[in-house]
Figure 1 (tube, rainbow, N blue to C red):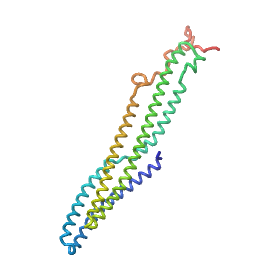
Figure 2 (figure 1 turned 45 degrees about the horizontal axis):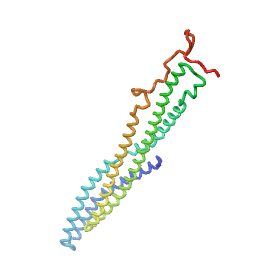
Figure 3 (figure 1 turned 60 degrees about the vertical axis):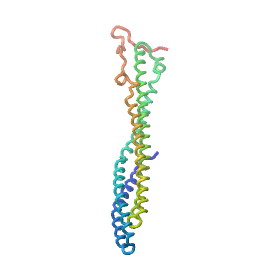
Figure 4 (figure 1 turned 120 degrees about the vertical axis):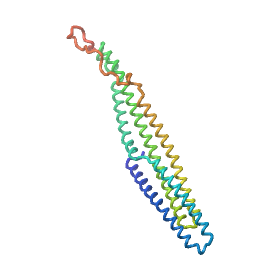
Length: 267
């Protein structure tokens, strides 16, 4: 599993790629102006061909600006806060610790008759046994809830990391496509090359949008399972509340004139 340090490096890589993306987008206008200037200079040699090349260049530029604005909006929409994933990485271990503690309590409370029945008998003992068993069941439920919470967090982290890797990959492809677009615009007559680069960039953006939709669906599934576990009252008293922890009888002495409700078992 990716460590927090590895994930921070991935975040830094993505931030660097986003900066490069902005740089390439800024370079598109300069490349377009350079291409127009090149065509103006070539007009006396190419004649009417320049007008065709100019129309192709203008069309490519307008198309690129429109699609890149949409692409940037998509990138902004699919941003995932890396701090959330780091928090999940931290808290899954905490919830496993809670699970282990709750299981430890349940083990200690398990089968009280077998543990205490050879030392303690009477009405008080019987009442104690009826009180302890619900406590043990509730401890087991806490352990189950903690385990579900921890595993859900781990699942969310795994899917989050997978999406961030997909984001880094998409950004790399988009930047490569924009470089080709810039070359095509700057060359004036090389608009077809630029169009191919733009198509590559747009294809990567579409793939990223699909990856984000899948990521959201996975997070929703894990979150729904976690919510169900958190609101499941099984194992608790009606309410739901924690089972009563004290025995009903307080009569543990013979000073009030009657026999105590408990007595030790003598071998």
